[in-house]
Structure formats: C-alpha cells, structure tokens
Image (cartoon, rainbow, N blue to C red; front, side, top):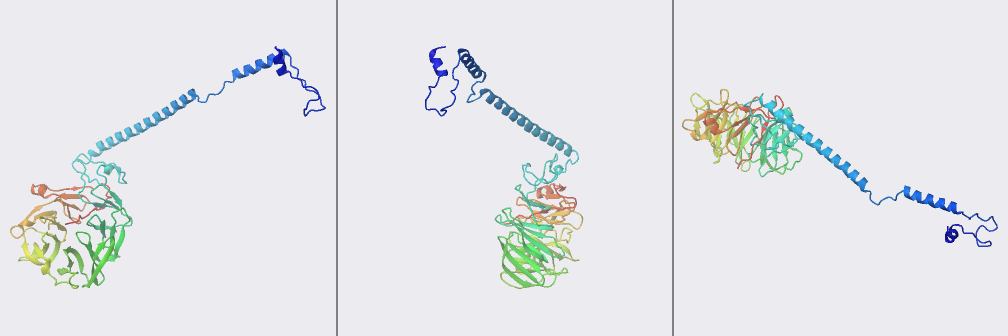
Length: 431
C-alpha cells in the first residue's frame, strides 16, 4: 500500500492538539494493509450486490400497462357478451310473442323508437308481427300521459280521468275526472313537466272548450264560465241555473247547457248576456260544431217521434236548420264531428258505431257500420281519422276511407293498460 493511502486511513493525531478529548486516551487509528484491503473489498462487493435504482423502471411500466390492457379487454368482452345476451333474449321474446297474437296489433305508447325505459310490462312492449299501432293523439293510461310525440309523463295526484283536452299553443292539458261523491275535479297539466294543479274541485259538471282556453262548470245553483291562462281561471262569469242543469259543450262563445230530465238544451252567451236562453226541448244531444258555426245534434222529430240528426243554429236557441232521419241512433250522446265537418262517428241503436256522411243530411242520410260501440269519447285527428276506446279497453281507429271500402274497424289492445282499465284519448285543439 502507498504511503499516501496510509496517511489517509491511518492518520495519527499529535498530542496537545485542540480536540474535545483532551486529557483522555488516544484513539487506536493505525490500520494494517490486510485490514485496509478487506475493508475495500467489502465496500466494493456491497456496491455491486445493491444496484442503483432507476428513475423509471421500464419493466415495471410494461407490466402495469399489460395488466391495464388486460382489464380493459376483459371489461369490453363482458359488455359485448351482455349486449349479445340482450339481443338474443329480445329476439326470442319477439318470436314467442308473435305466435299468440297474430293479426291483432298492439297499441304501443311512449318513445316511437321503442328504446326509452318504461315501467310497462315487458311482454306488452314487444310488438307483434302485424306491427305496433301508434295513436295519432295523446293518451292517458293509468297514471301516465303518453304524447303522440313519444314523451311520457307521470300524472302525480291525478286519478279517474274521464276526459282530457290539449290547450292551444302548447300550453298544457286539461283533465276532467269522472263524477265521484265529492263531485268532479279539473286539473291543469303544465307543458314543462310540472306537477298537475287542481283548478276546480267538487264541481257538479265541467265542460272544456275545444281550444282548452275556456271552462264552464256548475257548482250548486249556479253556472260559471272562465278563461284558462297559465293554470289560472280568469274573468269568471256566473248565472243562476235550474237544479240539474249541466254545461255540456261550447259553440263559439256560447255554452250549450243541458236541461234536466230530457228537458232539452239552452244556450248561454256569457260574454253578452248573464241569463240562459230559451230551452229547446226537441234537442236530445249535441255532437260538435261545423266550421261555419252550426251545431250537429240529435233531435226528436218525425211521426212517430224518433231520434234524428239535425243541424242547429246556436244564435237562435239551437233552432233546427236541417234534419236527417235515416239511421237508427242511440240516445247515449256518444259521438263527435270530424275536424273538417264532413263526418260524424256516433253509436247506433243496435250494437256498433256508425259513420255518418253529414253532406247527405237532409236527403237520404248515408250511414255505414264503423266497428265496435263507442264506450267513452270520440276524438278526431287532423288527418281525418277518429279514435275511441271500446268496452274492452281496446283502442279503435276509424278511417272514413276504410269504412267506405267495406272494412270493419277492430279494437287493438293498449300496451300497459291494466285489466278492466279504459285508456282516455286526449282531444287535440281545433282551429
């Protein structure tokens, strides 16, 4: 070993130097060559055995990336397997569903594309071979409102709806309940997914205009009429009325009022006169208004007296303008005039509905069988078809061309309707 190395390792301290060990024993700092060599070998061997860690571990990074890639492939495989399972299951459901209901189309409500989540039973949402029938108007099934655009809204707090009317300018819906021990309730359903609001409660009778902008009702010994704006009843007018009098419909600005015990009809021009007009006791029922303002109704006429169709003038206390006494008509008042004023769908005296051509009124009235008896209200679409629900709860679509061709409309089951439940077809606004 060189003397320089010996001086570095085996440095001796002279006595009397400024050390904190003054007056004590001197340290044994002498090191032999053999000891130094062993120390150096041990140091070098430890450095070789313990490599310096790298700033980035390529192997570790590769392993971790491989693991992540494996996880992603596993998840993707599971997702594809789930989709395949759903498709196979749906295909099996469709094949299984078509065998039991061939030729009877099911009315499918909700999203027209058929992929929105729905609480309706799975089996009812599977369309049969004939293809789903989508109603051209809104419908209420149970506590749900289905629009013809594919939207679905829950009607919270609403029950036993008997009639429903859209409000003009997309301002919501008006729903009228069936009569109960507490009377009738009128709800306004906002257009912006708001909660339905009660406009009237405990009314004896309610009538809603075809544009949804006005409402007439009876409460006790009085009749009322008011405008509907933003879920509020405004500019209310009232008049005294005999017991049992009921508002039935609107004819322009006039309210058509039914007298009790087949006492005919009166006209109430609320904006002009606060009193009811003279009763026309020949009028049995009213079905709607023509574009020129005349009312299509049912009157007692002929010899012997029997129910006939008639055009009535509301400006002259529903005086008869023209009469047609051809078909045998029921007197239940169920029926409605088409938007263009050409057709009337009404119940016949025997089983089944009749399609009447109002252009033939006054000569030989043309009426053709038009499928099942109307059990609720009739609602016409702007495209010229009529929708109604029969006694079984099925939806019936009546097309004049179909009826003229000799075809008999039939009822289609409505998906989601509970047994014994009758859906309600919503009336569209009229110009």
